[in-house]
Amino acid sequence: MKGSFRLGTIGGIGVFIHWTFSILILFIMFSSYRSGQDASQMLWMVAFVLCIFGTVFLHELGHATAAKRYHIKTKDITLLPIGGVARLERMPEKPSEELVVALAGPAVNVVIAVVCSLLVVFPETQQQAEEQLMSGINADNFLLNFFMINIWLSVFNLIPAFPMDGGRVLRALLSMRIPRVKATLIAARTGQILAAGFVFAGFYVNPFLIFIGLFVMLGAQAELESVRTGHVLKGNFTGQITMQKYETLDVNQSIGDAVHKILNGQCKTFLVTDNGHPAGTLNREAIIRALAENGQHARISDVMKPGVMHIESSLPVEEAYRKMTEQRTDMAVITENGQMTGVLDTENILEFVMIKNALEKNETVA
Ligand SMILES: [Zn+2]
Image 1 (cartoon, rainbow, N blue to C red):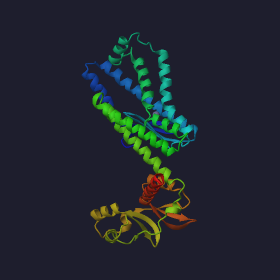
Image 2: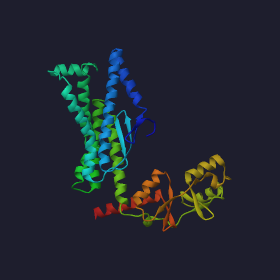
Image 3: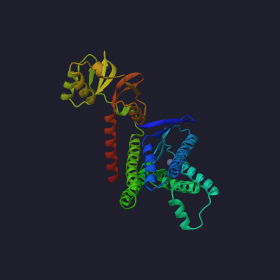
Image 4: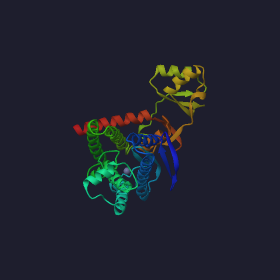
């Protein structure tokens, strides 16, 4: 993730911390200073926050360890002020596996809370408890607070809303009975309704809830779209949507020629050829940029994106799309038995998704 710093590596998984984390620490120091606490109380507070993030890290490691059971690698773990993110190579699609992976995180918090509860001296009255929890962190109430935080973390993460673990738990449970896309839709909508509730409550209770609400809303939408795209593309191969008609530019042509082609057609991405062989790609944005920076006499070979991705026509569209977005390439050459059969661009894939979506809607109406 952008703005993250590597802390280290554990079991082949990179561990990162996001820079906004420092804001959280400063915020805590500032608010404990404002409430008139001394340096030692402030240090206890900072130590407490660091312990929380140790917990968040263990929570993410819980997900990663469970995923490993299903041979799914974890790319990295990033700690953010609002929690951690473990980037798994992929999410298990089998509901029972997704359920285990999603529950493994909160389960870590439950285990920590149970261990704490064995060591903590619980206050006897409600009043004592409130006093202890309100008086800032110190040696006496450190464990009690840590216990409470872990209870809170497990409950908070089980809110049935994407991108919370609870959203995945709900989706996994639902998809044991109904199709995954429908299950995702229900889980995402539930999440968005809850998120709207958070935002609303945020205005009256704690502005932090507004922040969480928006985070949940966006996360739910993103999850829904990615599952929908994956579902729509499933069962289709790149050979089926290969474009036989496409525009080319020769490496020896100029930006002026490219501009001419843009004005005369609707092509957004060009295949650049050298002696008739694919040598690179060039899209509209790059042409306009090159025109401004290098003028219209610049040669295509100097401004193109060199190299072309080759994709076999038997590759599922879903995988081709993932490959292309990972490599940030707009266009790939499609081959069949080593022979070029056409090209595929990401725009074309998205059009295909839209068309299939529209057809599916039409079917459900009919
Ligand atoms: Zn989690």
